[in-house]
Length: 315
Image (cartoon, rainbow, N blue to C red; front, side):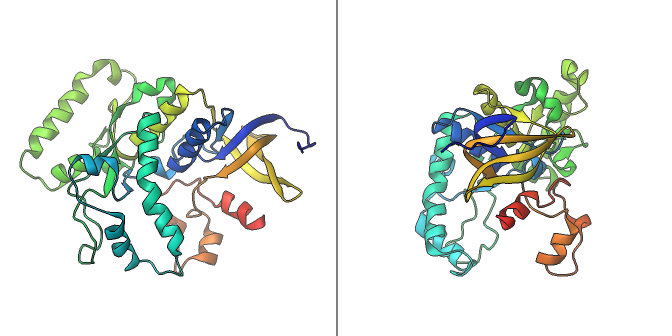
């Protein structure tokens, strides 16, 4: 039965949060039949902590690793993980679901969207002394993309952390970071090439201080956003979810503040909460994290204040 509440807008699916999880959920909803999808983001920039990050994704047995000839298996990865994660923390079926469906998810994005990754040959598992560990080809990073593919929305893209930029303005990949920071053979040639490309790109220098080429976290976010643009999936910035609306035990929409104005948005098929963590909510840090703890210690976006988590707990 359709909700009889008053709504300002109505969509099939409303996604709260514009990071990797939120945008991927929006694209998957669209590809699986819900064509009327909205993504909301409370900041004036999109991408969240996904965009600030190095963009790495850990998926054993992914298509890029297989193409590079890496020898891996779900069983080997499970052996590694079970030494780090107890059954109480992650039940068997959840671990199997991740290992079985992670590669399928990568395939889904590769085949249907502009999302592309690069396998990291020399990025080892964190505990290489454990059984089942590998010294590379389980982690991936986003393939680079030019900012102008976003159209004018490049101005609203949250940038990757400054430490992943040469001179604070030229983004580099994780592979290039290892070369430059470690001053490995040929590092200076790579640095000179990046600087020349930056200086000689006069048309872009007149628009932005940052290089045109995007890398790491913000490149992955840009690829997902471009894929959303291909499908005309709207992204509303400055739109904070204030409450999940439920009716008769069923979630039917969300209440938001959009540019200071309260709105009610119906979600005919579902609401996806992908709004990040609570690292900048000191009260929640005190409640849930070991002490001492401080919001000032986090590199995550300051907009992560646990909004979606609090609503999930309430419901």
